[in-house]
Image (tube, rainbow, N blue to C red; front, side, top):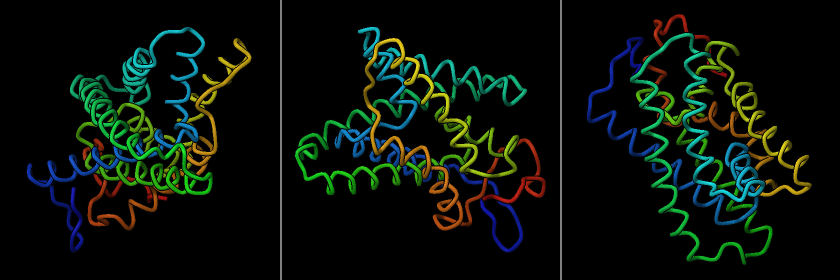
Length: 234
């Protein structure tokens, strides 16, 4: 939804397509950059990686299970069964996984893992920041979302009075707890590093900043309430 001169306008199909493709690409591109540095994944991805390490099963299995389980949890947090939203979560998760795989393979060609540590940290932070910008855009479009980002949206406006940092950190706590549980069982932990800490503490703030400064006329739509009732974004 667009806000202009005190009025709200629904996005046209062309506008939706532009914002959706752009945001999905930014999210996948950022993930590809962060993964290629091997400096730690975002908390939910790290949780899946640790479950894979603990069980010896493919990480793709746990990423898929995460998509379905979080999409199911969203029904309870939203207090509403919306099949379109549920299957939209699943579809987005599939599209994101495919595109993220393409970018990860592309960036591996540059061998970022062999760069000096300071350069890898910059690349990793750039990637994670790009993810935050992408999340901000498609959360505001709010037609189909990755279930984890949909959960942040629900927590943000239904439980944390519009605070993106609080919602994102609360969301990420579960991913961190999964990794810690695996560490207690196996004695080892993988995919946790400086990138994980940056995502945990800073990604919510990047989303809030992007809401204000990246396409600022694009506002949260389809929230099942009028915009005057949505708390101020922070």
